[in-house]
Length: 257
Image: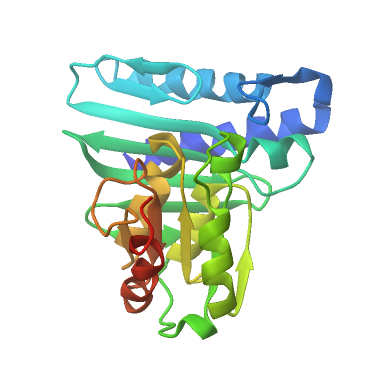
């Protein structure tokens, strides 16, 4: 399974890199006022879907651009062809390809590839989490004041009246610093390998977080919604190391999300 997933996601990343060199902003469409989609998103997803359907034709697929197929299958591939399309359009390296596989609703493996950085994050349910074949673990930071965290603003792109600005303004003074990559999958993988101590965001979709959240969990981290339950990302998502998670939750539970 890993061999197939690795080959598919790395090849998909190579398509991203090649197409970005030729890409012009005239090829950008809008799913919303600020929500971009490119011909490359569609091309990459088509490639991934074609590879899966050729190898496992009975499996279901949930892709950001193509939607859901084979609803009755026990297996579901969850695909985000380019997470961080805004970065991609602006010729920045902060984007990723994300693929997860679920069996009976439970994620059993996932991969996130950062093509511009040549970093492949991977995890399965038995072997733990890895970055380019090296085992990874979440950080051991135990104080918020010593932590560097990440967040994003999908809620603002979606025009949500209740948005992340409140949480950012409340949490940021208690942290060492904040980062924003613009790709939730990338942010989650950086939590998994200890580059970030935590991440939160709202208004995300399953394809944004399925692989990254699983990689965090397999790296020893905790992932919940804003209430400490498992209904993420529908009710927000918080990912961090175990020492910080219970310290983050009160920032979200004190205000209805």
